[in-house]
Image (cartoon, rainbow, N blue to C red; front, top):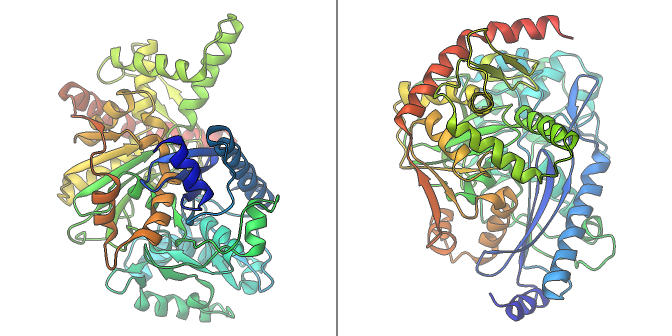
Length: 533
C-alpha cells in the first residue's frame, strides 16, 4: 500500500490491531486491508520467581499494554503522519494457559501462575487418570485442582478462572469468553461440539463437590468461541485502559482471545490437516494438526485445538533459548571488555553461524538449558548446565551447536513419539520465533531434530501479534461460512515467499548422537537440582 493509502485507511478506521502478551515482550502490530504489517510497538518485560512461583505483576500487564500501544501509535505518527483513533477490529493473545483466579468483585486472589510453573504434578496424575486424557502441568484445571489438593484458602472464593489473554479481553470488553485454542489449554475440548468436554466436566464436578467447593467447573470457566465468532466490543473503560489519552475510540469489535500457540498456527498458515508449526523462543512447542486421533494417552503429548477447533497434537518444552541468550550476553560482556562495539543482532549472527562449522554431534559436549522445570523429562525445577569430558572437543563452534541442539532436546523426545510410534505424517513444518532469526542456522538445527524439511516465511518474525491481528481481520472480513483455513490460504498467504531447508543427513546423525548423550546425562541434571539450592 502507498503511504497516502495507508494514511487514508488509518483515518477511516480500516486497519486492524493485534496485541500479544509474550514471555519477554508485549507486542502490538497494526495491519492494513491486505493483511500486511504497517506499524508496530513493543514493551519488554520479564517473569520473576516470587515465593517459588513464576509470575508477572498484574500492574505491569496494564502499564506494558499502554506502553506497547503508545509505541505503536508513535510509529504510526512517524511513518504516516496519522493518528490512531478508530480500528476495524482488535485481537488480544497471551502466553498460553496458566492460572488467574478472581473473586466475585473481580479481585485477583493469588499472583498469576504462568505456564512456566511445574508445581501441579499431583493434580496432573489424578486428573489424567480420572479423564483418561493427558492433562499437562501448565493447564488451568491442573492449577485449580492442585490448589484444592493443597487446601489453599483462596479456592473457595473463586468466581472466575481464566488465562492472561482471557483476563485482558474481559477487562476491555466485559465478556468472559475464550478462543477455543486457548480454552483447550484450560480444560479438555470436545471438537465435535467445539466446547468443553461434557463428560469430563461431570467427572471433575464430582471431585469439586467432594472437596466442598461452592462452584462447578462450567460456572467459573469462560464461554468457548471459535475463530470468527463475535467476542464483544471495546468498552469506554477498556479504551482508556489501552490509551489513557482518550484518543482511541470505544465500540471496536474484538475477536475471541487466543493463546500464543493458536496465534503461532495462524501466523504460519498451519491450521489445516497434515500441517504443523514450531515456535521457538523462551519455550519451544510444535503443533501438528492431526488426521486421526492418537492411539493412546501420552504424558509428553498435549491434545489441544486450532482456533477453529481442529484437533492438534502439541509437544511443549518449557526451556529453549533463555540459557542460550544468557551465554550470548556473556560473550557481549567480553566484547565490551575488549572495547569492541557489536550490535547484539550481529553477535547472535556470528555465534550462531559458527555452529555450522562444528562437529556434527557437537564434539561430545552436553548442555541442559533448564532455567525452569521441564515436564517432558520430569523435572519440577531446573538448573542450567554445561558439561564436558576431558576428551570432548571444546571449541566455540561445538559449544554453540551443543546449546542449539540442547534447546531442542526435550522437544525431540516428544516428537519421536508422534513420528516414530504414532506414524503421524505432515506435509510441511513452518518455523517462527527468535530461534530462527539468524538466517539458516536455527532452521537447519530444527530440520536435524525433526528430520523433515523446515520452512520459514518472510513474515515469521511478525509472530503471534500478527497472528491475532489476522484472527481479528477474519472476524470482520470473512464471507459467509468461509473457513479460517481457506481465508488464510487464499487471502493472506497466497504468493507468500519463504525458504525451505531439507534435513542434512550428517546433521540428523549428529543430532541423534547428541540425543543419546542427552538422555544418558539426565542424571547429572537431577543431581544439580538436588544439590544446588
